[in-house]
Length: 210
Ligand SMILES: [Zn+2]
Image (cartoon, rainbow, N blue to C red):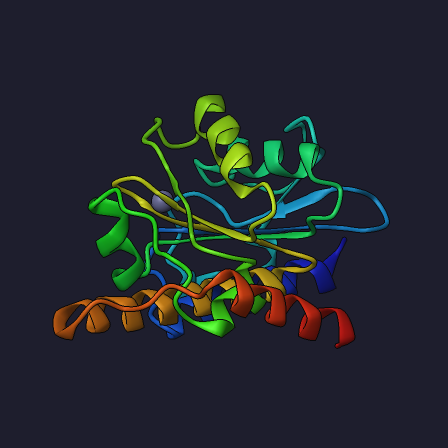
């Protein structure tokens, strides 16, 4: 069952690896079905290159397995907590993209320096203090920092993004990596300027009109 939704998870998970946002078997991806509320998540420890639709694990919001022969990703408890607490979220991407990880291992948030980051993330990219992967503690801290953002960095670990679909969450993950790359390069040659309140307000006005 659910062939289309499983295919969608496989497609975007493989796309993320092809774009260099994750290396084999790291990171994880999920979506929430609008009809059933079930969560479709990538399995633990399978090379994405060989991922098949039937490898995707289907769970209810309380982690009861509906379908699937594999173990769900180790980070699934964090995905489930985000879905439980955010009715607007229908896709989650967790990546270890290299430039963003530079700032994650420095435990440093990425300031709002580029207009596209405002449009995709909603502001700066905050950092979530370390908590064990897959733990309730990590989920709680992540939810707090997500607030009105669609992406966070996880200390010493990676990136988590949310969206109105899995493709949307992946697009945010791409923009996070792009921002991190720009910030990384900019700080080699100078001090990048943060967007001012006036600039942010102007962007908000543009966003309201789109
Ligand atoms: Zn990870």
